Image (tube, rainbow, N blue to C red; front, side):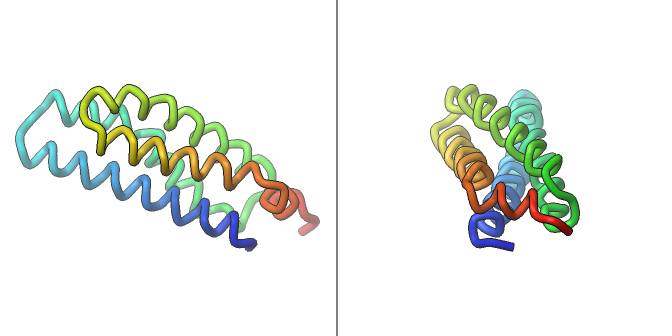
Length: 115
């Protein structure tokens, strides 16, 4: 697995863990509206983290799914900026990092290689 794919994988896992941590903090603070916002805001990140586990198993369809989930998560994180800069900008940065890393040439070559 090339460095770009491994970096995208780690960034996707970090994004999912960050969303889970923020959701847990909101839940512990008993702020139901914030919990709902976090669950909606990071649901695509959690799906992306699950998809990141199978980067090495499947080929091009997983790359396309990863790119699509990262793009949707980046868009949703723009709305999370209204809640707070940490919740929105860090999620936006990580999802854009995954998006850029998965779209690199060496990532595409690795996902489309013969198995």
